[in-house]
Length: 363
Ligand SMILES: Nc1ncnc2c1ncn2[C@@H]1O[C@H](COP(=O)(O)OP(=O)(O)OP(=O)(O)O)[C@@H](O)[C@H]1O
Ligand SMILES: [Mg+2]
Image (cartoon, rainbow, N blue to C red; front, side, top):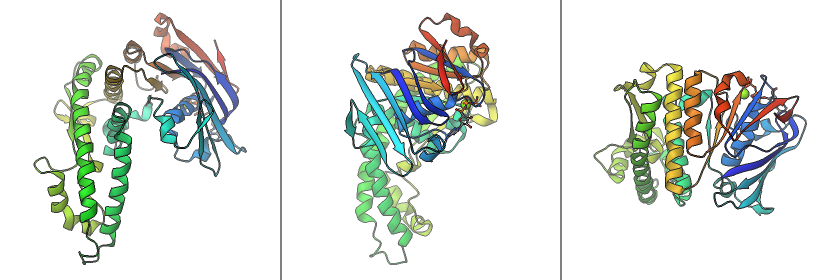
């Protein structure tokens, strides 16, 4: 997948801009507050239907306006061209279209564009809450297993029903019997667990070899925790926890509690790694996912790297971008100054853009 042309209207500080990125590497420079992250944020919308900086869609609409629009001409991996559009007003729902045809569900649109993001906050993938890591795994599965997003959605609905009964529990089991929902949780949950477990098993060797290049001085291991005890199946785990779940009013075991656990030299990652090294561990993980995605689907993804200069030395920046370009990923990098990216002279198909006065100028 390649973005050939991107057009934004009334998005953040941009009234109306358009630019034609390189199919391989686009470097976006500009002063603080010029709009570099906003450009990546707009691309992120195309891949996720949301911002990576705010959960309020209104915040990205240019001040004193009613709606933003993002439009892109894309090329899929067979060279076929298509156009996608996404807009959102202050109060209304998303409007999205592919080749001018209205798409009802935002999820249909975002499944077209496999986009990953790396920012200074990405260390949360290692040191943040398990939900970050579940989301990471689910991205990989979502773009590889077609049925996966439906599975996750259905699981979420069933879980909500079970939790509602648990919350209402007043000591009368008959009225609040969760049995019906348990059965569905078990079927969907075991399936999610199998897919995730298999995915992580495929990811681990790719991650380990990438980590050897990025952090050769450490032994970094990841392992998969499925969300309940090792030695029991989900049905047993739900039964065992039922009294506790009734007390707290939610389901405390299941794939919604799954995690990827990081160990560096057999210890918690944040105890051993510096900030920059943590960022490299995340870079290795995301690069491993990119490689696996390309290997398994034969497709190419898009990678957004915001503020590459933050806490990564020049050698690490270069290694990361090299790795991404080797997988023929379309890469977008932002930096305040071009001096942070002197090594890019070696890349042939790059394009340089400078953001200034709410315009994007190709250099
Ligand atoms: N809804 C909005 N309408 C208009 N302008 C906005 C809106 N939201 C943010 N801005 C402004 O948009 C500008 C661009 O912000 P952005 O975060 O993209 O800059 P940046 O180039 O990434 O800066 P930095 O180098 O500091 O990361 C900022 O000046 C910000 O104040
Ligand atoms: Mg920024």
